[in-house]
Image 1 (cartoon, helix red, strand yellow):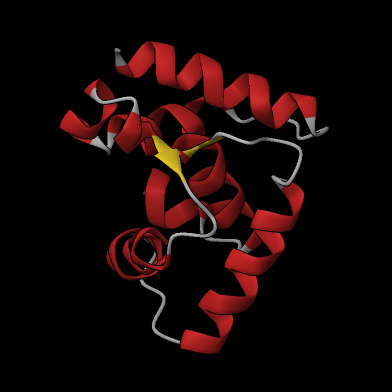
Image 2: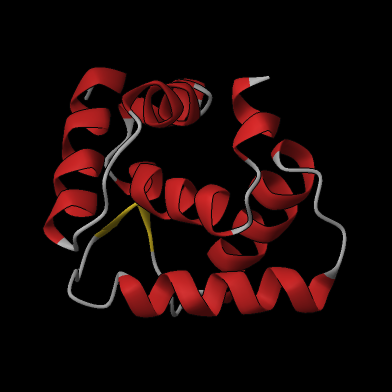
Amino acid sequence: MSAEENIEKSKAQLEEIGVSVDDALLSKIVKGFGIANQSLDASLVSASDKSEVATLKNGFMTKKLGLEDEAEKDAAVSSVMEKMKPFKQKRRGAVCYLLTTELGKESAILG
């Protein structure tokens, strides 16, 4: 799977739940996943898998968004997972996009 396919599928999920998508932001987030874009499993997030949620918090939220506060990260993850509830397979790009916008951290991605 290519980054472009992941972008398309993530955008479709976001639009399905009524989110207006900033294409440049979504593209930059998904392309930042690098080689993980090639694996279906890596392009999805399981809300019930504690290790995946930890990777999301420590990898994406801390390293990419610069967030340190655990309570703030937990609250954002809970909120985003609630929004993504309609999807059995949650696209990593859609989840990270929602985390970024919910936390107002677009500038951390776009520069």
